[in-house]
Image 1: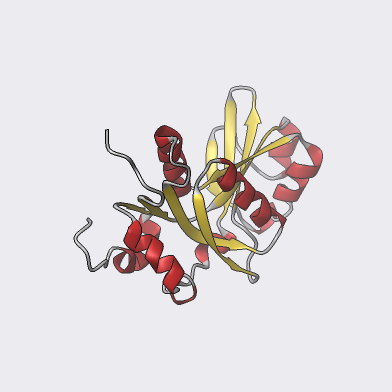
Image 2: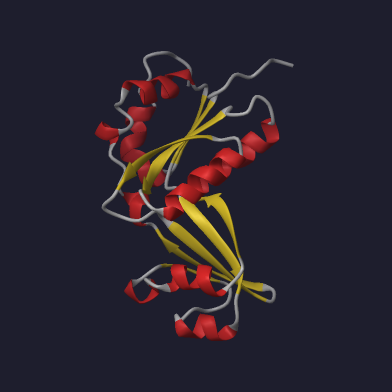
Length: 186
């Protein structure tokens, strides 16, 4: 079996910190949430994430579809650690720090572009009996700046090092730059 190297898989997408908790019906009602629904957060959900953390026992996970995919790939690969690399944008806040820690625990080599204009993207998973309601606040996940992150030489070297690329369609504009490696790896 061939030996894999670090950074062989490159993922780029919208990182979210998944915040999971078992909640009560009153919590769902307060924020106008329905069981088994998934929505983008609106202004009325602004306080939901902090209240979830303060009021309920929560579990944190590095999330977002692309980050989830590279996380599962890394889990399947096992060794070497950091076979999977991930790029995305987070805020300079406590949720960003937690997200970095969770990616590290999953052995994903996450290189986040950090900015202070928007908070780290989050997804609240509110669980009630056999149901779950997902509320995603993309926030910083939408603030990725190619010229301030992807174009940085040390980051671009990670793109060039990869053999497999997985990029979210929402970043398709950036994807053409990620896939424009001069080698024939793809």
